[in-house]
Length: 117
Image 1 (tube, rainbow, N blue to C red):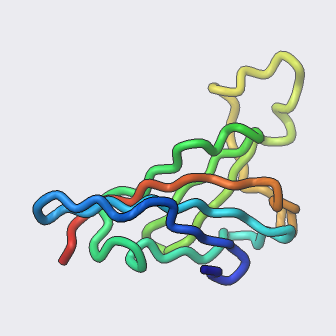
Image 2 (cartoon, rainbow, N blue to C red; image 1 turned 45 degrees about the vertical axis):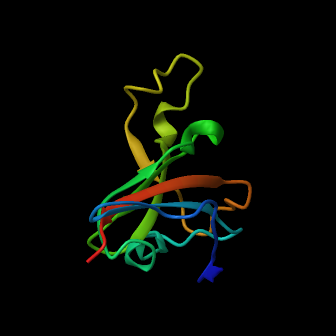
């Protein structure tokens, strides 16, 4: 399934426990990231999401976060001014990646959980 410039794949069946549901989705970005993030609506997978957790975003040096208000996946990296060999990656400020950045090698797993209704 494709949503704008993202390639989406539900990797497992939904896990349903009582009124809660958890969905597992792999997201692959494309070669031209737009400033402000890629459109992604978690309600397509879970009716009322409480959490969208990214499980493996740091493999390529990026941090991916879900912006629930704007329904977008945003990608961040260490600010250019802090990309020195001695920079502490955990303490460095993050900046959104630049417009049109090629993220075609970035694939992340999302765990979306929340209510069924």
